[in-house]
Length: 346
Image (cartoon, rainbow, N blue to C red; front, side, top):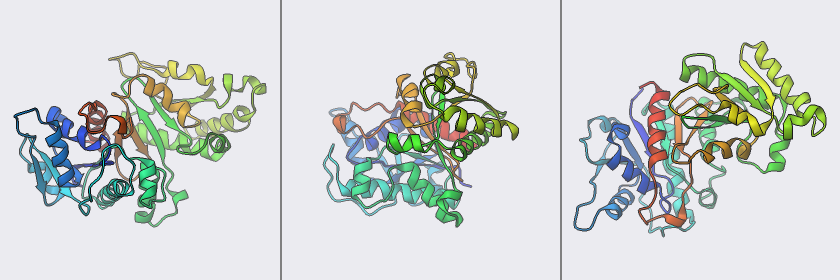
């Protein structure tokens, strides 16, 4: 497999191109051997917008293949043109054209990774409404990548289960369900889904940590149901799933009160694995993501677990409100690049 990392362009109306340009300019250690899977013109515009008055823009170099990324000289941004050049796109506005650009870049990168032509994917933020307006039937990156993997493997979506992990240097969380309404997310807390999440988490982190991970499991209800006073899901669904996982050799425990389990898992800064757990399995999107994002979106990385490829992304969205202003922080993208290198083993 190629060692190259593809950074997908993201929604060109958002901050994706800007933070990519900043990452190449400010973090050469993280971007070495990486390239942008996107549009040369969009990246040149982003680079020019960041140039100081009277100084040239950071150069953008068009490459012909992913294999060329390793030989690109320093101090430039290598871009592989993987889509039809877009028509004019207004900054900070939702549009089908921007959604097409973002979605097609991800599709190209997913297929290249599945063929072994690139070593990992780092996805800049896309906008879910724009993606939908472009006709993509997926609510976000995770579901799109799952569909591409399933098609490549000749399997159904159900046979390629994936989960979202959000991580920084203090806390990791993995979600039982991802992008759905809260009402549907509660209904999605079922034995099979919880057990599958524990298995996927165990496999992914065993590979990343080099040992069996300690998994703490959050309850669904306040106080983890308080013995059934506030809900029965813990004793009827979550606890049996944990017992089944432990019978398979997983180091899983809980369910614990959701308002304290994340604090118990949090590592002291600079001391990896110093928390009581290596990861917390959360029952739904906001339960798991709020604690990690509260610690600072500039440090967070989104990782898709369960795919036959490595995919990471920044822990933030398109930030239309500051797109084109030069104010976007590239720190989370840089951390996503670094984590992608760790996960792909290089």
